Image 1 (cartoon, rainbow, N blue to C red):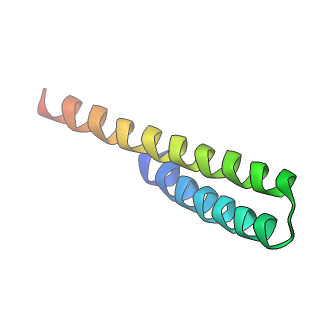
Image 2 (tube, rainbow, N blue to C red):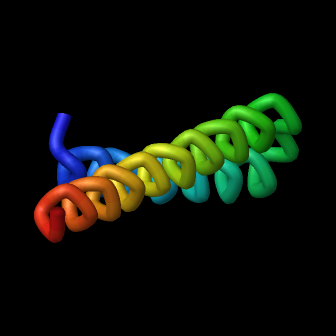
Amino acid sequence: MSSTGDKVKGMANEAVGKAKQGVGKATDSPKLQVEGKAQELKGDAQQAVGKAKDAVKKGVDKA
């Protein structure tokens, strides 16, 4: 997957995760809150992978 694709999927997972957390809080569902936090963290990781790929590509392009 491209770095842009990783970053986009990461942003989407973060947004869905935050929404799940909000719904979990509103409905007093700890399970949904935990699932939301996990998905948000997954999104953070995906974005980090995308940024790392960009950094590697820039390093290779300079070489």
